[in-house]
Image 1 (cartoon, rainbow, N blue to C red):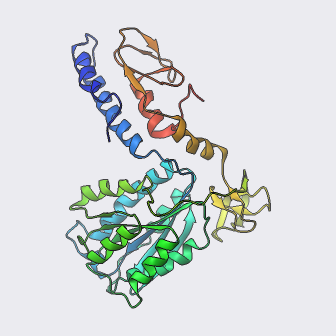
Image 2: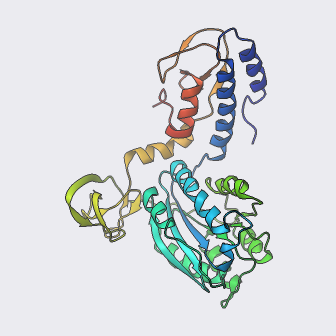
Image 3: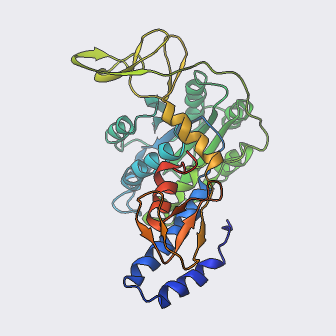
Length: 361
């Protein structure tokens, strides 16, 4: 993806190199980091407010193969937490569910949630089994059941992490693929076992992606491509009014039961409509179906439409960074909307974490 003003990076790097100030290597490193961050920011720009992602992990016998060190499943479980953190960071109003593919079946181990801590906890319980029999059709059947209870206005997508070389189906695979296509569920696959014609055809039918990493590092990079939503060419999102409630957070000394996952909690949020206790927004209230969300999550989602890549400038003048209030002399960034100046450190922080320009806000 082409960056605006990308041709100026070499020019600014030369000016930094020739600048009499000390620490030029430091500024060059920041310049390169800004270039990488701008490219990542453009990739993860997300016009969708709500997404539901179901991650299905293949735990059959092939997941123990050690062509990826120490094993295929171990590599997946090592890099999935970083992907989940970035997904929830870039999609504040989205949720993730976890399922495992076992012997000719698929089991949901975690319903949709936005709690990164809960997701990591359940990922740590996944392990390989000694049985073969990966069934894509059984996984799609489970996924359709899971998505039937989600919101129609949210994008539904599946991410398969497969280790098997084929799909051994007792059900009609393409019948269930057609049902997923009709339900506008996008199917993405990242495969340790190379290209499989059946699965490639399924991803193409549902406007998904099929990726085959060659090593551990490539897997960690390829999986990040699923952070941003892929375009659905054959389906249109349903637009409808959504009942939203802003909850109150409570901390109690006595254990209480959450209504969303039926687990013991001490910190919870109270639904403003039915006063149910739920774990962590955003989520759909299991009692009154109110979309429970925090104000800053809406603000961060809206920030994708208002925050753009800052333009680098080198006018030879000293400016005060609007973020950290420190002087910036060599290279600084400028927001096109509010015209505020920022140092490279604040520029990187704004685009990687906050997603909202302090000057515009």
